[in-house]
Amino acid sequence: MPQTFFHAAPIPLAVGSVIEPGNWGRIMRAIHWDAGIPPYFLREMTFEAVRLRDFPSRPSRFDALFVFEQVDHLPKITSDLTRRDITYEVELVSPEKLSHRGDFDVVRWPNSQEVRTIPFFEEMAAAYWRSENPAVPELVTLSAARIVRRL
Image (cartoon, rainbow, N blue to C red; front, side, top):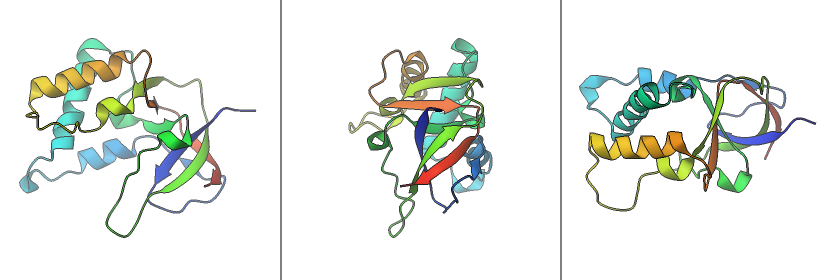
């Protein structure tokens, strides 16, 4: 039996549907500069620069799909004030494809008021790509995932 993971998406999908990797990168590539640069875009660009420089064998977050090993590790992402993402149990379509087990706790914004500078994001990125024993494992994979069931 294939290993299952957990994924959250804002749209209803049927059992058996396939979620392709790369949606986060599509969102990042669609950001309009005239609206200002969101801090998460700066974070993701820095993560990508550090990955290319120091961890080139890891998959790009821009090209990947994000799944979690435990349902209670899924981030509680609120898409807006009235809608929450739908949680799915999924299995990887191509588990042999390149993956990285990062620590989602590193990606979350800290509670501190620390200034979010490039060096700040570089430290976050290095910790994320180095992840050896992540507290909240986030599998960043180039595999698509098939929905096993909606939770």
